[in-house]
Every structure is written in C-alpha cells, then in structure tokens.
Length: 230
Image (cartoon, rainbow, N blue to C red; front, side, top):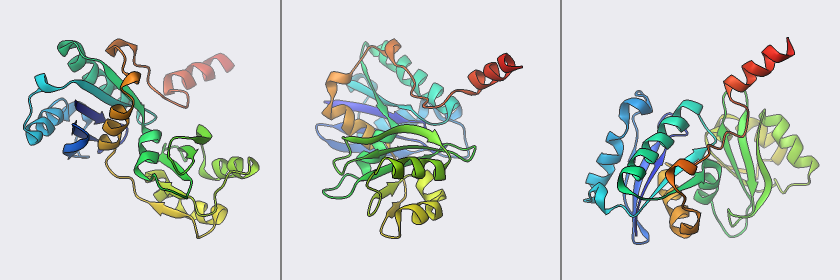
C-alpha cells in the first residue's frame, strides 16, 4: 500500500510517502512560506523523491489537528481535493497521537505537548505504548495542564515530554515532573501520520467527512461569545 501523508499543524510542516510498510520519502517545509504558498507543490516534491506519481497513491492521510487553524484548513482542503480527484479515502490523524507515536517506548509514559500560542499548550498524556490515553487532549497554560495531571495522579516522573510546547516550557515541566522527565524535540510528523494510517486503514473515510480537531474554540467562536456576553 502507498500512503501520501501531510502535516500542516506547525509552520514548518512535513509530507511523507509510506510504501509497503516503510518510509519511502519525506519532505519538511520552508517555514518562511505559508502552507498556502507551498501546497500542493510539496506533495508533488515528496512523490518525485519516492519515484511515484499521484496515480499510485492508495490512501491519503492528514493531520486533523490540533494546531494552527489556518494551517489545518489549508492542509485538510489540499488532501481532500487530491483524494476526491483520485476517488480515494483519507485517514485523519490527531497530531498529538502522531507526536506520541514518535516517542513510543517500553516503559515511560509519553506527554505530547504542542505550542498552542497564547501562552497555552495542546497536550495529552499517553501510556508508553503511545496508544492508551491517560489524560485526554486539552488546551491550557502549561502550569494549569501539569496541575490537572498531578491532581489526577498522572505518572509524570520519568515521562517523555515531546513537542515544541515541551521545548518551550521545559522549565515548568522540570518544576512539576522533576529532572528525570525527558524533554525531546518534535520530529517531522508526516511519517508518523502515515504509519498510524497504515496501522488503521479502517479509519479511512470519504474526504468530505473529515472534521478538524481544534481542542479549543476558534477565534471566530471566541469573538461570538464575547459579543453575546456584551
């Protein structure tokens, strides 16, 4: 099976081709350009690197969020258009699930932390298998997130914290989880999105059925709530 995957949850983003159980090609984006400027050219580039044409793709996969609202919309729309044109299905994947997958191990719980801007992180806590969710996705300031997890007796000591949110707020993590907690940078996510799609082809859906994973309210929803409150 050949899977073409895309992540636009961060400014850099990435694209990958997964072929018969292995990574065939991977491309990371130019963060100085918007996703709208770079897509779908980046997908064409990664297919060229894999020596394949778009007609060879069996399944598409895309990061459905959380992340930049604009990036999510551009990425999802791009993959939807390609999938509709080829008559293929799409597997939407949580970016937090993909981050956790990148840190899967045999012992340590995995905390996926994405920088949500506004002084917040998108965060979820997983068991070492990076599948079982110990604390569900939230959007909150880092100290608030850690306090909630501590009140829930979540296993933080020795946990692996992965993502740009973990890197940005490593001091808060050290205060709450101790210095035995490991903070590791976020790798390009497209390969892990493709791997999750390969493991779960049953999650494939028609392109129009994809629902973005925002975790928190959009700017438009916040503005509406403020107007209603006034």
